[in-house]
Amino acid sequence: MTATNRDELQLSRRSALGLVGASTLLGAPALAASTAACAGPAVVAPRGPAGEYQLPPLPYASDALDGFLSQEILELHHDKHHAGYVRGLNSTLAALAEARTKGDYSGIKALSRALAFHGSGHVLHTLYWHSMSPNGGGSPKDGVLKTMLDASFGSVDGFRKQFGAATKQAEASGWGILAYEPLGDQLIVTAAESHQQMAVQGAIPLLVCDVWEHAYYLRYQNRRNDYVDAFFDVIHWDFAEQHLAATRQGAVQGHGGR
Ligand code: MN
Image (cartoon, rainbow, N blue to C red; front, side, top):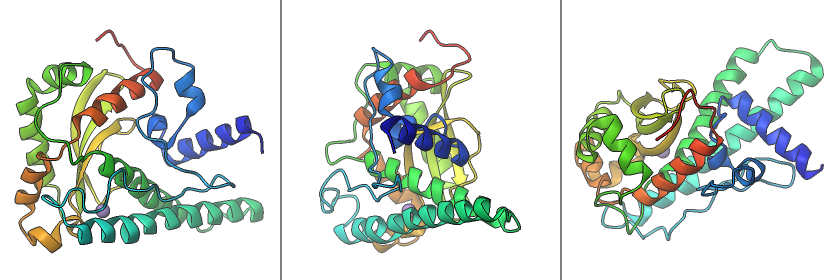
């Protein structure tokens, strides 16, 4: 398979997953290279020789966030839970390929649901690891992210309060999400229940907080609010800044100019 074909395949897979615009997350060198001012992808997730998805390594040692989350929580979460989504995504894509070969779409509803579930799980967990840093916390430095947080939420503190409240109140298992919405060229906060039910199609997650119990229960038990409050002590603003810049370059925008 040529590099071009592989890129096209990756793009078509992303389209199938409803992940268009997440190119900076899953790696689209062609797109990134075509925009001179682009900061480059913030994350390039590994792919196998046949284009299959692979579990990306944690971007820091598994004990690096110990003040916030223990090594045990991070290793379980990454090595077991995230790996499971990657496996599920690949097996669902294989099942879809088989359905196409056979021309048998009798199971398409369940396969579409599985694709959304595992695909969103893989994307959001990949983002989650990068949403935190042992050097994180504080406030974002002056730049596009801070400017857009001010414009969209009134202030960084306004974002912090809305993101914290939305995340704490996500029903059952879910996510708090800071997303870029390209038609309005603005930032929004959404809360996903489970993780495939994105509230705004086309909005591109920039920074996320996992509030499935497996993310925090071993240390925080039922105190989700304490976990979300402490998340801001490790929040990785520089990642969001770079991810936002690369995402805006690759997005089809309704209007821009910020
Ligand atoms: Mn999780």
